[in-house]
Image (cartoon, rainbow, N blue to C red; front, side):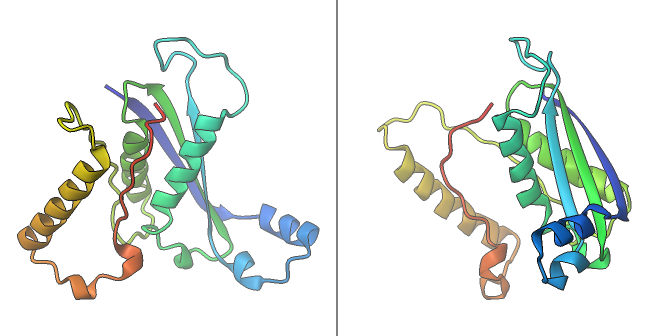
Length: 178
């Protein structure tokens, strides 16, 4: 069982943006007026079977932070919080796989619980393919994706013409970072 603790701080005034704008000489006022959603992921030293050394943010933690930000940014109504910052911090207490999905789901619930305006909840899922019969996993995945999408469209009576291209999920095979 993967166990994650997520905290949400904000929205609060973003004082760092003014400093960043002065140091970078960026004259784009849209960046200053938008809300900043910052994410941070950290593993406890005892989260995995092999004890980790405490220290600065590792590459897997940075990757998870970036993926978490990519998942949460579209669901939070950031335009409702101009010149503010929302901080989402996730602490992985126990990691037995599926950590990114757990962090995304827990963060989404934490944002909703904090009373932030959201379009919808983000939900992370994991799935695995076991016993690939013909060792052609990409073809199997593509066939599975097409069949699943068709079943979802039929089950929920979705009008595909009303879904914008940016709101459709794109699936790709990536190695597990757990």
